[in-house]
Image 1: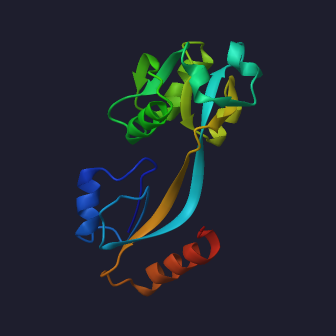
Image 2 (image 1 turned 180 degrees about the vertical axis):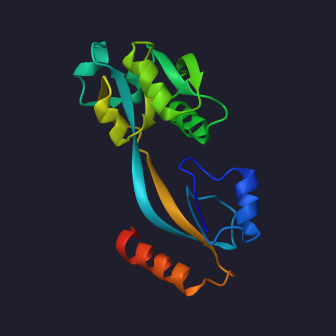
Length: 174
């Protein structure tokens, strides 16, 4: 019984997990979860994407302040990434020009590829197949880690324990 959610556990799944509906969960780390053991297994950077004919497309890296004059395709309030991107812009004291709000990163990339604006999204290999320029963010620094999570008090069956140990040994990162 595994559960995987790229963005984060929604409340109903988190509750199901706490009540032992799942043996192992792959998710982003939640604070104030003392009963859950989190093992970092992967990391992901945020990048800026722009249409290939955009003035920013000549950049290999960018300070997020440089996005200020451009309309942005932004994560909607329903996305956990909205708060993360909001915090990055607050850190640099820039109010983004939000043109569209969308839930899914791949849909955001589609809007960018059609010239509706620029966006800050997690790096994903799907971007390589799209008509967008991927630009590394030089400032501010940010990185998202993904975790394998298990209840500290939950007994693992031998097969689950083997899987847990395998992931920890082969994919665990510092």
